[in-house]
Length: 87
Image (cartoon, rainbow, N blue to C red):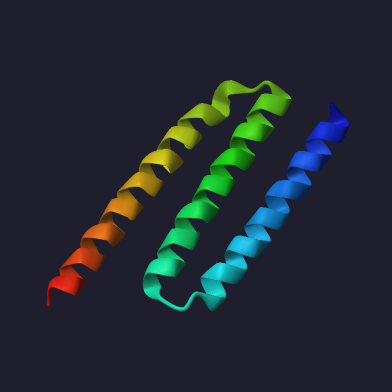
């Protein structure tokens, strides 16, 4: 089980590093917004993985709040982008 935890940690770290690269180098604001949403999904996956590994359910409210935050952020960016295109 420890080998699986190490592999998952490495994969999430690599995914986070690649996503941070896209946030820094993104050619447009929408690319950066999508990369930020992906980074939030990676954080949610990391917290969920840690909660499953440690068999601790206290992280579930944190996961719910992060999921709602990601949804509201994505909707806000989408509304901002459509209003910006209308002008």
